[in-house]
Length: 98
Image (spheres, rainbow, N blue to C red):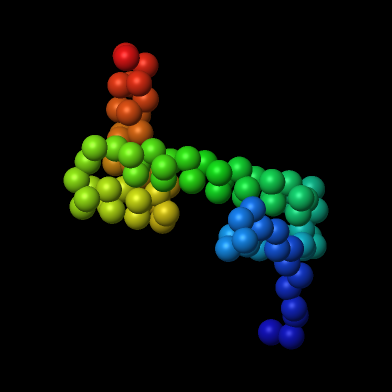
């Protein structure tokens, strides 16, 4: 309770701020298992770019509003859901055939 966590905040856009912990509890005991703060920040930025790309793709699909909302919710909270993966896979298949 008395410990204060050090965080690094970096933003891609003015309203997007990434917060990562400089030091984690596991790093204290097993430093070889944990990535550095810079590498974790780089991975977090890459995941966010992937999220924005998939969100843009879902916004342009010709699907019902309810399905779009459900897929966007899955993208946000369950990025590996089967329905989302199936929708994106079908889209990639259609693009390759044209």
